[in-house]
Image 1 (spheres, rainbow, N blue to C red):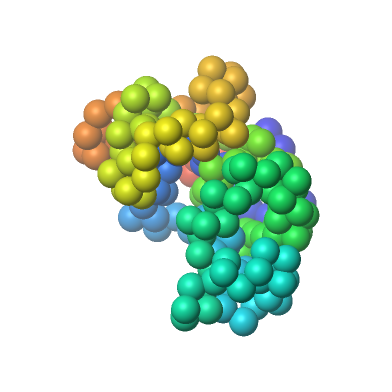
Image 2 (image 1 turned 60 degrees about the vertical axis):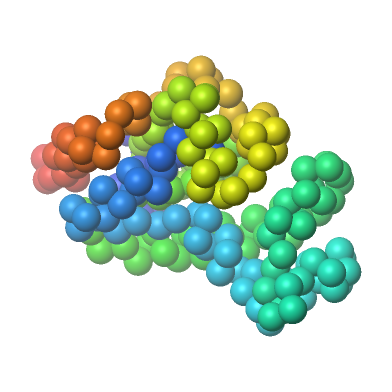
Length: 206
């Protein structure tokens, strides 16, 4: 088991869109575990008046902003999914900023271990920050249904997002642990409680 230098035990939690990453991480948080969420950090680095958002507006034009100067994420998502060059430009700008802040938050965690939530954990170098990979899994049709309800977007757009992520079978092959999110919240909570004890055991003095 690899633990990145100067960090606590980091459990990388990932899964496809709509798989239940937020529900799973909330279960860990309820047990007193620090949760670091890459999506939250990604939003923080493009807050109004941030240097990153200023660069984005200069590159894509002022229409990429809402009237309150916040980022129009739906518009930006539409642009980058249609243009790989623009997607690469955006990633080159944001990924270093995001990774720097993620490292800071992981280093400052005070729980016995930390849950690091990232939808692209296995598609990017972010997996290098982890000690173990925990995958939240559910059938693709459940992913589409959940994401469509949550994000109010068309199934076709969800499928396009899924196509940019590592496929389900490959994700499962890379997992050290799996949460089967096929049932209700209580079933998920029971699985998390069991893993919690396993992770605490890994951090116990030998």
